[in-house]
Length: 507
Image (cartoon, rainbow, N blue to C red):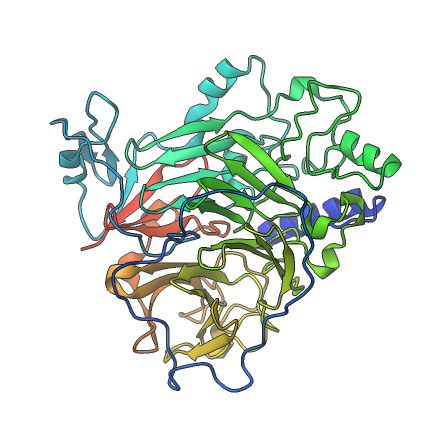
């Protein structure tokens, strides 16, 4: 763990140094079926716990108004909306199950057969054969002859480099966009479909053959020709998180460069797009197959100030289907600056008071109209012991705190930096599954342990039945790549880019 944190802090410091000369710092669908909201003993927000929404000042983006269907809901790890359009194959090939490795059987169109899923056992974790993202290496190099990743991890770095996913729950699919720092220069967008149990290339990455030899400095997240351009043109809308190159037209695609996306990637079903707010706001339309960039508060890139927000380098992104706004916030990296929002309809930006006074590296999921988080119990932050759920109500803009009955000892809680907090909401159970480090045996190992949170009963209990120890255990950089899918009535874990997918069918 210490080695992981050292690498994390080092890469972040290099990134800050790389931008210092520029004067910049780079930083869900609601259920139609009833389920309980998190609630505390007082049944609501306690006096003094919540702040009011900062109205802020908005300005016109100058762009055209985005179209879309009527709001349904979207975001990260929330209950499914209506009947999902996911489809099973109806062939007879059952595939195989060898120990804890399942090889799916598919029909003639490539869909996983329903009879094949039926042989997957319930109540234990199973690997899905042939599902690492690295399976796309040959296809990627065939599409871009001579393609090479400048990072140390290659294609697996798209997943492993402190990045999450954008989850489309009803259709049981998700997208990955990541890399960055020294891990990967690959800025492609990749999709995984549970219907076929395979990765595919949604959008090819930019071709490094078009870049100059000195395209990057100490980080793969800052394109130096773009940085050089904004030094000379400080009022332009160019920013070094994009491939802008005044001297090389082939390189000047204006696509976003690779970066750690943390928990900042989201799928928006209302607009059928993938978006993130890590540094600037970027949106990829799955209809037009193009990226669109937005400068927060209409400020030129050279005038950003990460200390006051703008998503930061380690942020969250959520889609509010009622207000039709994107919410972006730096809830990691110990950055407590304000969140900001972007209204799709009137194209305005606002500051939002969302981050509570002491909260870093907590995992968070969207459940109906609340963003529900679970900070590491007794961690480095204040106010995280006893264990509690902390929810932000999107309608009231108030914080709600829900202490949990538990059997933990403060002295055995992990106090160091920790990015491995894991939590998913399981709608049919109305429970949260969480995992974190805790020294239960008192031997100083602070091993991962898995728990169930019952928000209705306000309890936290150890749940070894959900452990993934057979597959190397939980992983410190999973981010939001652990979730529940109603289409399969299963928990899903995207642990590492070079590893198979893990699934856990509920008993």
